[in-house]
Image (cartoon, rainbow, N blue to C red; front, side, top):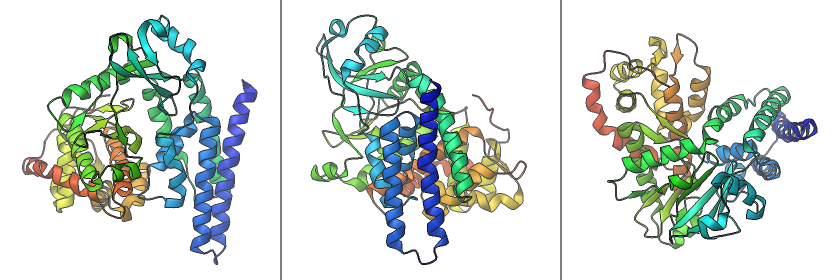
Length: 428
């Protein structure tokens, strides 16, 4: 185990250090051309892809996060990483059969009339197989890799060390916040029982929306390491060419995604926290979206979502006093002199790519007493930043999702007329 851990740590540190050194060298060379930078970005993307596909684990999740950020990261870097959203190298079912049967408590043949040997999707934690139950229902079986819970702490330690190496080689490259984000959320995604409950809750919340489908969970067959879900046939947003061939209006899809997330966050207060393109499908009828993978879901305290919506709508409208009142009601600490930065934060969240760098800085470097951001808002910010990347992927160069989100927030402007006077209770 020690050799295994050391190998993963050294391989991660080597890749990240060579990337950091390459960028440092380009920065030092004043004569570096755009073509040279493009080649460096492409090389970085390929190296991260190789690391992810070679080691799996947390490195796949790292690549997925970077591959979702087409809005701020160079296209040559992002392009190779997009395949990690739905084309992670998978394993034959034979290698997972015994593990799956332990979870089910019986042989697969007693549960499924048939199950495909080759998976239809694979990710950092699990892979998915198409199957048919004995009663004829078509389902998918999501099997968590048996080593996942043991491997992720090792990989997170490797990434932390690699981030320190990168920082030492290139002081301008700080990957620590990204590693912290992985550490914060990965434990949630390992708990399939929690994911099943979250899936059913969002399914119930959206039951009256004919434009969105969430798969049904077969709870009687699911455990905290294995899920059996209704099969939904469609095309993921990662397959842009296939969507275009089907005649799907990508601009309309972007607007529908925005409206969906505005409903989940600001109306329901319980939302899907991982909207990368591999988790969003256009179903075969072309009229409905499917939302998959609820490993990272978040419940907001009562009143939090409405005040967050009022804060964002007010900031975009230019009503800084109203936005500040709503922000402070949900736990933001904003000194008067830092108030204008709240506007930049909101602009970045709604897809103003010029301010996305500022967003990251404010989220991670806010000083106590000057700008403190409540923990519940951090995942909202993460979702909206990823959605900016999705928007840029679907309709490059335009803030379609940001504009649609802003339109969806319009009804919340009324909340600014009577801002909450008592802080919202923070719950975990």
